[in-house]
Image 1: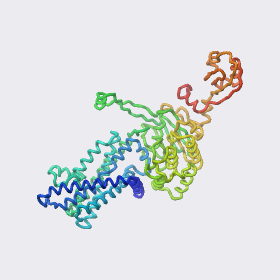
Image 2: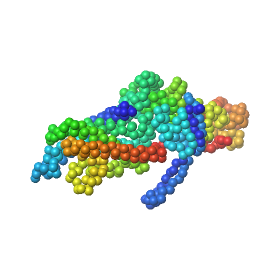
Image 3: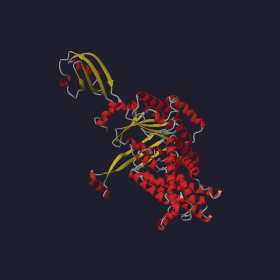
Image 4: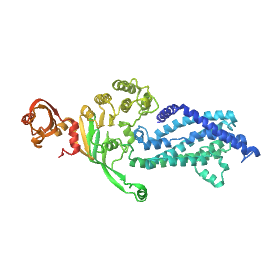
Length: 263
Length: 333
């Protein structure tokens, strides 16, 4: 099964890599984004060199990591799936000899590989431009990677659920915008979550998005204890199971009642 | 036991009845009204292994609905389907492994990649051995003339080229059953011929059971042995193609080249005798029921009004027969 998922991922990656110019533009766009963040925070740090316990080097590293990680987390497949449902392409996907979720997971990994290429290149260019703090230790760095992998699975099921809304509404554009802003705020993409008012922090702790960007970066800096790391991983696993069950229920129900578009 | 068993199959759709305009739309939101439409109404048939069946009917007769239920994409409202012992909509993935399907213009090929890459992925997804894959690829490349296409990107292919690749992709994993839903739509004659030959060859060699829906009756005429005709959700004919023609095709069309016409033949002859389709100064086309009249009878009555120089006799083709059935001129008892 894993072999098949990887085969699909490879196919999706080669299809995406066909648009190399797009990749270059993404990277360029991300570098500009990071530059803007760095200059904003440079202005903020003029009056002192510690804000909420973070140094300027830390905040620069934070944003370089945020922007480099963001495509891995927020590109996703909800749009692909939504379009496929709207245009009736899903017909072919439902006829595959592997399950729908596995097929789309392959597509998701393919997208992630593209995002990874963009992210890694952005990271290296920006660390040369602005300087970046190294991870606090090799083990922390490995845990950082593990938590990100789990985060991808969490957001994957979220994307599946959002994409499947197209079964009922025929369009996912609105709900996708909604998902994106929730993700942006609660993952810490806009600003470190510790800058938020307390009630927002409480909400962020309940939702799984914080563990997609903010938590892995905290692990990168070595700010979490072993117990806290275990808690994070456990929380992610629970979310994966819960979202999988919800997605499965919606899928089974939808497939029973679909009228496939386009004849 | 037959390979495909369909018994008392019914599919009803709920269609929401939206009224036009903003007010109607809001009314629909608050109190939606649905109309129930029966797409497939209690049909039963069995298909044996290796059969090549033409499944025909007008647009909206319920063909695609039936095919989608057979592939497990739609859940029947009631009734039973078994394909090789599997209930398709309950064990979809398991069923998918043994079937292949072409749905009109929808493609399973990867748009931006060379065709061969899509084939390689199919090989992996269906766990084909290298030998099976190479053998099929070689055979299909030969029959469908794919040699120059395999390295081209799918988006650069013409419709005909794409369909040839699509057909190859559908048969690549040696499926037991293949559903072809209008595979020849929009293609030129040569490509159509190519695809028909492929379907016939594979059916003969691999004993693949094939169900074909089409509006091009030449497809049926050249490829299929058996016809299932569906009209308004009901099967109105199920049997051999030749019997179908014998049963319904009782009419003969005779075209005469004439001269020295004395009277207007259309006005002189009664409709009960025969039907004049076309009449001009030096030709006349007549359609008559072969059970009631012989060719000589018609020649005699026409020669009362003119001199016959030449004549041409044609049996009714599948197309004419179907036209009559669709118009309701032939009533099935």
